[in-house]
Image (cartoon, rainbow, N blue to C red):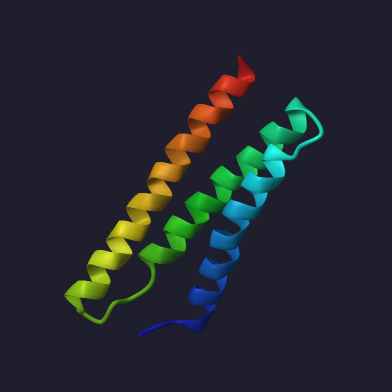
Length: 89
């Protein structure tokens, strides 16, 4: 069963990852960039969370797509964490 609220939350958080990353690259300074990257990382975590709650109704193809998207979100989390470490040096 697809829960409309889960989809709504996923679309919101996934869109926020990219928009905050774009804003980070156009930031006014280092602190602003750090904050936008932190928000992107948080939204990627949230996207992974909402993806994990979406049922694929035992459809193997949809399950593989879902798992791939969760892995993509996890990779983005690692990338944002690395960016933050560099910014904090």
